[in-house]
Length: 115
Image (cartoon, rainbow, N blue to C red):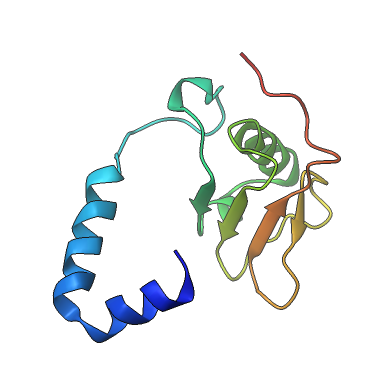
């Protein structure tokens, strides 16, 4: 979405509601286990994994992050909780400068997608 379109939605609540409904219709909720293969979930440009990793030990965090990155394109983004990081756990993601808890897939280090 370009900046001009975003301003239009901010200024017109009715347009914002329509946009919200469009996004809402695209969201699917599923129960699954992050420790198992996630290949059946599809592909994701953005993954919100907020306040989940804090409950796992380091090896489990690494496993979860490596499972997630397999679902993402090389220009994908991962959003974590404020107390979470990928630093020192995996090199599959790199921090987005100036944005806390937002990471970009590091396409140069990303492992091939599992089938």
